[in-house]
Length: 130
Image (cartoon, rainbow, N blue to C red):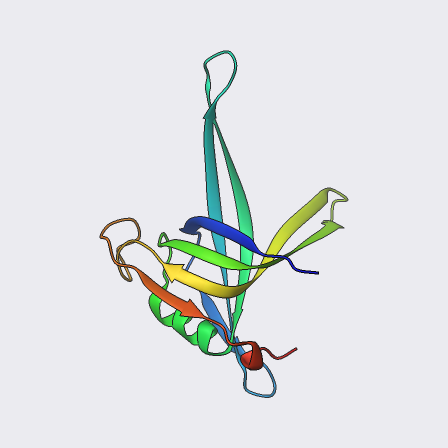
């Protein structure tokens, strides 16, 4: 079986890097993907879907170094959905994407939506901890 998801959106916050007990770097960040359309009655509609993204190894280091809040990014990877109830009993869900390839779109750090820079980082299969 094979699964691949591609998203393009903006980082909701600066990435956070940590290390596994064995020293493997792991970077997490959130990406907001916006969809706009016009409804049948002519009203402009918008929906934002949030994804939690995790990058491992060399890719984690590159994402931590080059990404920042607001930056436009393309992420390719595998998706997993989780559902639970919060402390008040309300249903919650999250979409979690394990990144295999990340393209840094737009400007550099501190320049979220401007510029035309494009950089690409990929995860090697042997670098994955599982």
